[in-house]
Length: 214
Length: 331
Image (tube, rainbow over all chains, first blue to last red; front, top):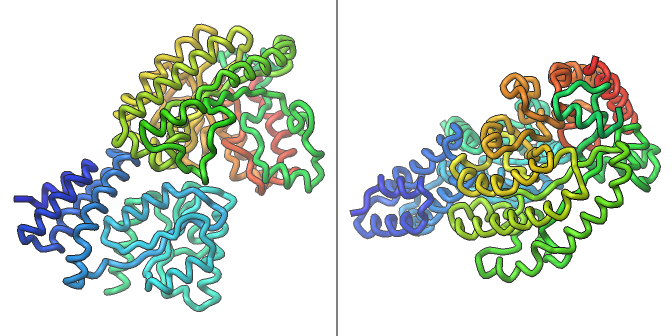
């Protein structure tokens, strides 16, 4: 019999094929899809996130774990849709205009998924209009922006300024990150949160969305 | 002292008449364009920007293991290959003999000026994180540690053999004061890979190449951005002796490194992000790094390419202060 614990353990080892097979088996055996998701996949990803934050695992291990999580989620998604499972929240994420660096952004997207978010990855070189339009269309709770370059980080402010000018600023939690970013910059441009790493971003995002809902 | 003698003295931890006044990084095209708008002449001839600002020349040869015929990635960080079959197909475009000959020709042209001491020289070769990343692409390279471990070993073995061939041809005519392995294997939070992955996929290949460099008396450095401090013990195991660029924005502190690693060679370490703020901020930054400058084995320099928000006038102030503190550090 497939155990939820095994799903979590194989996920942490980045073993996508095993995770997929175990999720299929667990469903066949009648396990609750929500339990597989929360106690198997997301719990495993949370362990990886915590280890990443503590420098016990590194970027390659996060990537293969996230790939394993996605393999499991792909199997689960139809079942979750059937029972009307709602994500913790919805996020749009992208690297800001002029910036083509995406590994940090991709890690955050993976961690957000691992924290139960529906994530809409807008890619790189994303302008303010696209961030806002996609946030509106996807009914996002979060707008997450990444920048690696000192020359592109000011473009984060353009998105916030546009949100303000459209009267939409209060509708979204705005989170920013990237190598040159810090808390002072986040405050200066009016973002809600700066987080130093992908795992912390997912934690803060989850708390922020749940706090707002309560 | 000549520029070359001064550089060698600092790398050896000996007392120079002053520290070198150099920029290790080439200048960002956006920065150069802005400076030209502000009155800097079009760069022409040898060391044009160094001559304009009054910096000491520091010349670099970079040997690429990719031939001119090698396909270009479709976008930033995109892949050139996926698996073993792709690698075999790509190989005719890798490890080119002509790059070795070109490097030898450049070295011969520079030999007289170098022997006269007009400039220091450095050599860069692509390391065992950097080079496979250029083939796999940024993200797939990170997966390759788990998806294609044998192929990753094969690539690093092949490039290590290529480096040895290059060095055997080049070092008899080109004596760089130091060399770097281009890697960029760290970021603002520290290493991008685990010590286990480093030990398995990188360390054995450093150990193949570094002894030849040391045989010729070349100081061995590594070029990796971000927070490099946790990796210094890893590098020491490989025989690496120093690092650049020591980015302040990632929290790197040259004084702390000196305290923890007294013989470690450092190049860079000057916070590029304060340079646009003017003389007072730049002087404060020099005061911060002065203890490390005085300690030897440290060539202060901007901690990566000078950003475009640094005006020509502010860069002139930076060079003026660099000269002042280069003198002060040697007193």
